[in-house]
Image (cartoon, rainbow, N blue to C red; front, side):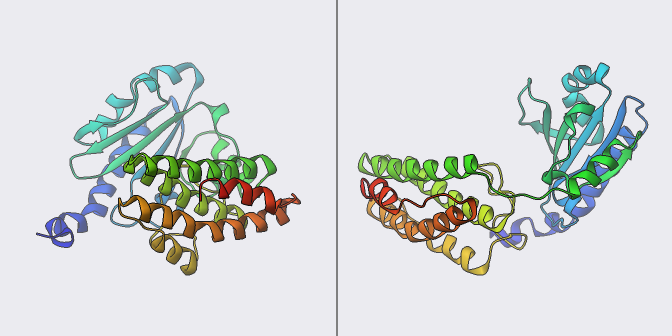
Length: 277
């Protein structure tokens, strides 16, 4: 039984299961006087859910009970359905609960001071806002826009250089999963560069969410390049693909240098890359 048929019937019902959990969440949280605000981010906030969307839940609690609620995060999540397992860390401010209906809920607990205007909060769905703080934060967030800065650019390009060098070292050592991991980081670095050049807030590094598929902000050309930058475990092929990425890196690097008013230093770039490529 193939990927498209084994869980087809179950998957078609996932939106219904997700809505059942959302209903349980809101019935539980809206009656709690210590909870000042509840909102959704992610696909629910963006209003572009699909069959496999998670529930990105954000809860704002009174300062004096914050630590109690954080420590009780797993027990709270059990109020909303049958939890199969949790993947979070005890000291973290969030809980990640996996339910028996193949629904995942990422819950973050905040104090009032933690919720500040941000480009990340431009697309949220507010379901509880007892004192209007969330509405104010949303309005201020809508006035913000993203643009890359010099420090961000410097981190981006030096990490790219480092991944390129490390890919060579690991390929030569036949540490091929390590080399492939470096290649994957180079691909993600390019996506980060594309987003920076387009004035779109990049994902946290390591997060491939919504970078491919129907909800991607990338152009067809960029998505096509990602498909081309694929490699097997063959070390020669890995390094061939790394080299294929370099022309696009140089193109994006030049574009960002112009935007930020930074000297491109083409000879310096060539010196760095030619050590290993």
